[in-house]
Length: 118
Image 1 (tube, rainbow, N blue to C red):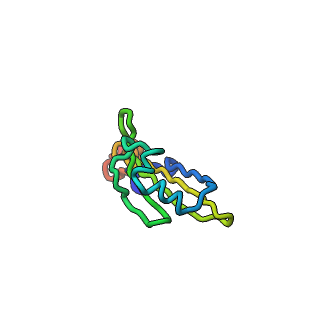
Image 2 (cartoon, one colour; image 1 turned 90 degrees about the vertical axis):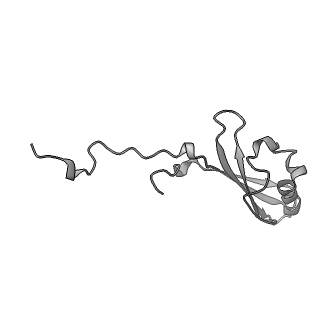
Image 3 (cartoon, helix red, strand yellow; image 1 turned 135 degrees about the vertical axis):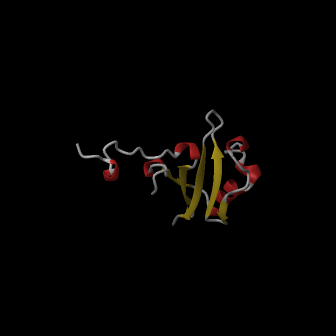
């Protein structure tokens, strides 16, 4: 992690067990007409996914609808369960340059070259 990365504890991971086969969940995540029923298009910064592995994972960039309209990346991962259902993992990671702030340096940091003897 560099000095401008968001803190690692800003990522939110949610797991859900769904009573639907992965194929059906995948369609709800990837087909725009179905996706718009639960994720309004106004929430998407771009209607096209950032990345997708069919049937396994899809990643979208989302934008808050209220100011300051921060952006984040949300990844949806599908895992089949033994009973024919789906474990859906949602990983929500803030990804807005305005959240990346330089780490403040201590006033008494390692500035030996600038310190003068009294």
